[in-house]
Image (cartoon, rainbow, N blue to C red; front, top):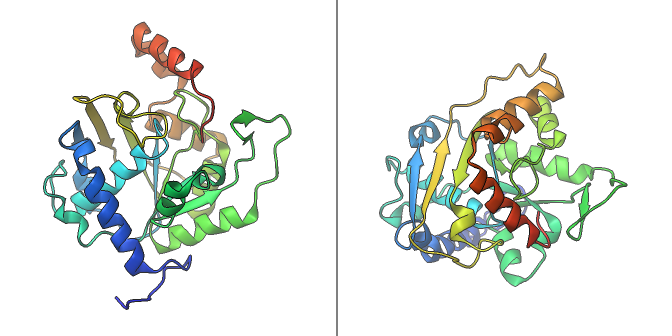
Length: 269
């Protein structure tokens, strides 16, 4: 790799690689040490093509979820079997991993701006502005959809289709449109424990000794030509276990805990 070789977004790969190494080294013990990350399905990661893969996941913190995915993906590609032992897997990380994030979040401070260089695709939320839902939705920025297209063509893209860290919120139809238009392999991921481990942003540890779970599922079976947008949305909701039917099997105390947490939140992406 040339010293100044760039990816399709103009980021210098040499700098991006060192950012991933440094942040990965600093954050490793958050998932293996202070807390433990229980992983299932790492063999699925190893069997994926190098590009046009879309990961869909529920969402619990701004950054800790994505950082965990960088760890798990690279560990799996390096031959780790459902674990992130020995952080040397980050010495030669997969360089074409991207994640979709709200533009206002990635501009909120120096650290998020630096982290954005590691692979953020910043998008403008049409339904929310400065932490408040808006009644008049903005038009989708065509540059945002084009950037997601470019990222899928180049590699893997992580997205959180609910667009929020609150549980059981509707999946946004924009994700279904991306799936139908670009026909990626869609890999669901279900996470848990991050909300208890970290603060809302996912930058500060809130509690130690938490067992975090990270389940990678088989790619979705999607008929890109015949499935409707609503049908794809429903498949995504079931896959990431955020469909309303899952509320029936969740203990009442967990739902109450989630509601109490939501009352204290002022902003999200």
